[in-house]
Image (cartoon, rainbow, N blue to C red; front, side, top):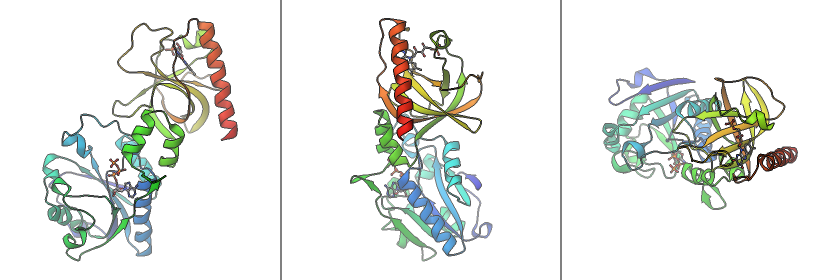
Length: 313
Ligand SMILES: Cc1cc2nc3c(=O)[nH]c(=O)nc-3n(C[C@H](O)[C@H](O)[C@H](O)COP(=O)(O)O)c2cc1C
Ligand SMILES: Nc1ncnc2c1ncn2[C@@H]1O[C@H](COP(=O)(O)OP(=O)(O)OP(=O)(O)O)[C@@H](O)[C@H]1O
């Protein structure tokens, strides 16, 4: 996949590109609704001998326009790139979202970012908006197209009558409903990070853990214990993850919870390595135990429960 990063104003003209079908949106999480939009663009492109393309924006409009301080993203930009690449798209445009870009009139956006890129077909969801104050919609797009391109509107993708959206999935993950998040994303919710040093207490209680440092922009699920898979160097292991503050040992809560995984049948030294955790099911809340034995008994049960879950699913 070719990646083209640009900021406003850009210098591209139609002659720089082959004809293409373009899917438009922010696409945080690349969930099932997004997948439908992106795959529709791919389908139209291949039926018409065009290149398939996606245009996304970075950073998130709500953050740039200061409507939200931080987003708690489902994907970092590089995770989003990887997921879009896996869908088999030819070109990804990443437009820097700035106040100047946000103030483009709808017609200017269409002229400069669709027609100038030799786009012959646009695909977006029913609620996609463009241009200053989001005044452009799928209803105004034919007018702004100057008859230079066609468009396809993807109807609302729902689950139980609810629109599948990045915001819905964020709320679901915030309450630890990982099976529901899995259904809406079309894959388990996964966070990537680096293995860091913990307090080295885990091994002394018979449950060594890999502590993972995750980018601050990324949404971390509700605190608690989860059945997870842990991936490292293309290999996947099962495990149990605790997200929390370890109240059994710590008197004070740190600013952010630790994320640690006891990986089953694994004994390697992996500090500094890149790894990812996929969350399948929340097993329980984190507790303050009155003894280390009680904690050990509970983690033993957590492990059994996780193994049972993976046997059945
Ligand atoms: C599956 C699992 C469940 C855990 N549950 C709790 C808990 O309920 N309460 C708690 O205080 N610590 C809990 N812990 C955290 C342990 O206290 C922690 O792994 C241990 O203190 C080692 O920490 P360290 O890696 O920083 O050395 C859990 C850890 C795991 C792996
Ligand atoms: N459930 C859905 N059904 C159809 N199209 C969708 C759906 N969700 C998003 N889209 C479309 O996918 C593109 C990207 O959407 P966008 O990034 O705004 O995500 P969203 O999931 O709607 O997020 P948010 O929760 O931030 O509104 C847009 O064209 C949008 O209209």
